[in-house]
Length: 244
Length: 244
Figure: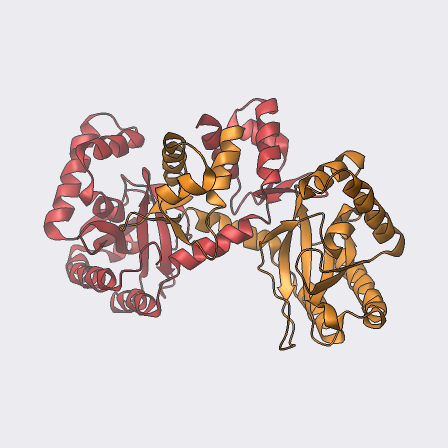
């Protein structure tokens, strides 16, 4: 599977700030041998995930359009869920609300209702973030077993003591039904999150609010927590996570 | 690279009519060993290209949302190009117009303006079609060398005589600056296409019209051909194929 991971990691070098890349850049960024990169690029081009432009730069391939449609279909919120995200955002006074799901040792934002405050916190839908950091991560981990927790804690690269710290945070999130974090992933950014569950009660997503730490005082966190827990329960009833 | 191709081919088993799949289905459809499929699925899940739903079915992963955004950004038509597609469609009397690019031995529709006729021909943006069949394919192949032509002809699986037939069709498309096809890929469907070129005059895309063969009479083809050739020149001047 090593070549699969390498191929996907090459693709991951394309992002909003690097919409096109040269083969040279891919070699430098990946640290892979030129021959490996050239072969991986040829394979990805053949299947339409990369495209060679006339100017010699590579960009996202047209074959991705097909998967784009599938992913957007699977992850499109039903109108009731959109209304729920908007309501949480409005009742919080204009913070951004969003839904995260777990993906390996990461979490990914699958939907967002942007806040209305001039200073607001915005993430990109589809963006990967570490699972060990932030309120949504702790909520998503509440169903994890010891082995998974160890794997996620190891990904943080903060030594063995961090594993116990993370486990304690996750236990607390499970007990309260929500989690809060201040500046864990991004300085000056706070978040509060609650679980979205499937019919068997398993946590399949987290619904969260994010904004500047200056607005996430203890008093407001106390007010936001039941909002999020309610939203989590309402979203759970809709059973839309991962599509039909 | 074999495992990369296998991984991408597993992903390709997800489409509009199979938005979710079980591991069992993937094993049956791919013909791969269970252990191989399980490992490939785990790798694709880890990187967010697949997602395990609560009901045990796999669906498009949230990580694809990021690439969806990149691909749509790279392949989004500038307003002038959209207007050009719309105009071709309107001036043809309501056939569907679209743009194709080459992808390995396939062509992929990257944009479409749907016709207005009750009986209209519609393709999916992002859909792969064989490069050896259809007017757009012949136009896209006009820059191909002998080796590429042989590879594409071989993909048709129609024996060696087909290679010469295809080469003749491609030569004719290059000479006239447009191509026409009747029922090559789909019974009863005709198409006419012209090249879109980059600053060096290389063919980077084909702009085409498609509709029922009953409406693509010789007389109308004579009228459509200059429309398409004009559209191809107008689109070439915009230099948008593959993004900026």
